[in-house]
Amino acid sequence: MLPAVAAAVWVLGACTAAGTDPVVGGATAAAPASVSAGTTASAVPGPDPATTQPDPGMTPIEAAPQCTTTRPLTGKGRVPLDAVFPGAETSAFSAPKEVVPGPDAADPARCPGGLPSRPHCDGLVPWTDQLADAFVPASRARRLVEGYLLTMPKQAGNQAPPESSAGTKAVTYSLVDLAAGDPGGLVDYVRAAFASCAKAVPSRVDGVDALVGTVRSEYGAGSAEVVLLRRGSHLVWASLDGSGWEQGEEQRALVVLVARLL
Image 1 (cartoon, one colour):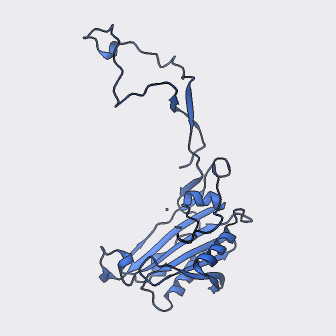
Image 2 (cartoon, helix red, strand yellow):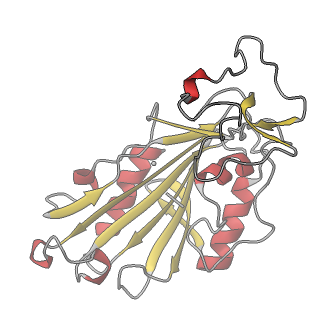
Image 3 (cartoon, helix red, strand yellow):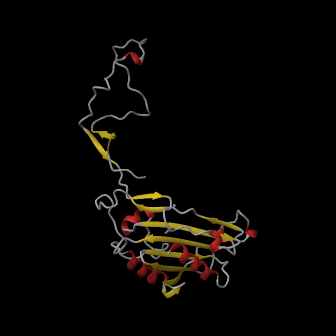
C-alpha cells in the first residue's frame, strides 16, 4: 500500500534511423583521405544545420504516458505523530504527498489496467500488488495519500531495526478519495480482500462502520490489526503493527485516524 506532468509529445530528437551505423565508444568519424595530415577537423566542411532536413527514415519515439501526478497535500491526509503516539521517545514518520490522475489517465489506450480479479493475500493491504502509479488509474480514484508513523522505546537505540525492537508500534495508512459512483469498483474489491485476506468482521470505530481483521506482523508481533473505514467519498485502510501496544492504545490511534482522515 502507502510519497512528472506534461502533455504527451512526439520526441523527434530521440529517434532511431534504419540502417545507420552507431558510433562506438563516443569516437568521432574519421576525416576524408583528401584532408592532409596537418589539417584540423574544424577545417572539414560539414552540413549546414540550418538547411539539414530530418532523415525520413527516422522513427519518432512517443513520450511515456503520464498516468499520475504526485504533488503536495491539498486536503486531508496528514496525521500528526504526537496525536497517535503522545510522548514518543524514538520515532519516524512520513511527510505524505498525494497521487492524483495525470494528464493521460482518462485515455485507456495510454493508461490501461484495472484492479486484479482476486486479491493477492500474500502481499500488503489492500492486496492489489500495485504501486501508486498503477493503483490510481486502475482504481479510478481521484486521490491517494499514503503515510506511516512509528515509535519504539528509547533504550532500543537509534541503530536498532524497528522490526526487531521489542516495544515498537507502527501505523501505516492510506486514504483514497473515490470518484462519484466508484467506477473502478474499489470499495467492493477492498471489502472482499479484507474478508478473504484478513478474515475481517464488521465493527465500528468512533461511530464509523468498519471492517477489522488481522494479518501477519511485519514487526515481530504475533499479528497486526488491519482496519477498513469509509465515510462518504473517503475510504481509509490502516495497519496497526508491533509489540508495544498497551490496552486501549490501538483504539485511540484509530479514533485519531477517523478524525484526521475522514
